[in-house]
Image (cartoon, rainbow, N blue to C red; front, side):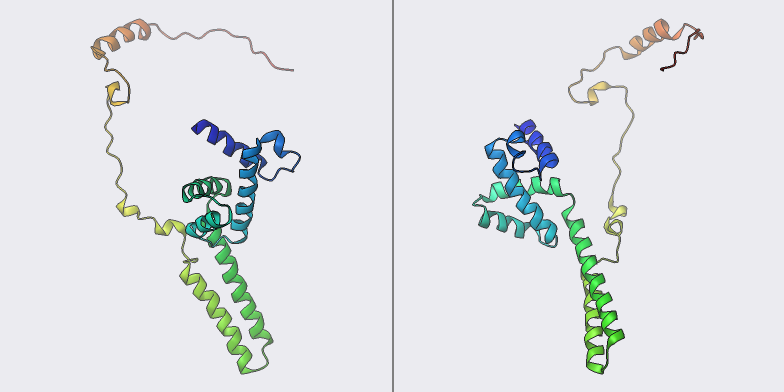
Length: 199
C-alpha cells in the first residue's frame, strides 16, 4: 500500500502539469481526479504562500468535498510536491516588505507636501513592521536551540546483537583469530596487469 502511494507521488511530481491528453497515459481515472485537485491546491498555495496549514485544510474540506482525514493526507502529499511551504511563505513576506519599503521610499522622493511624506513614511514603517513580525531579518539557523541538543551516547561494540534482528556470535574472539590466521597471514604481492583503454 505504501509503495503504491510512493509511486503515485513520484508520478505526480513528474507529471503534475501534464497536458489533458497525457494524463490518461500516466494515471488511472481516480488518480487523474486527484492530480487535478493537487494542481489547483498547488497553484493556490504558490499564489498565497502565507496561508497556514489549517486554512488549506479548511479550503480542501469546503471546496473538494473531502473528509478532514483525506484533507490532511492531501496536504502531506502536496507539501512533498511543493517543498518547504513555510520557507516559501517567508520569501513571499520578504518580497512584500521589500516592495512596501521601496514604494514608500519612491513616494517620499516624489512627495510635494507634508501629508504625502507622512503617507510614505507610514508605508516604510509598515514594511519594517512586516520584517519584525515575520522575523525576516533573522536566519533560520538562529532559531535552532543548539545548546539544548544532546548528542546520542554511542559506544563501540563487537556484539552484532545490538543491531535489530541479529543473532549474537558465540566465541567471537576464536572466530576472529581463525579468520586472521586464514586471511591475514599471506603477504600482499604486486601482480602484473595490462591496461585496456576504451576507444
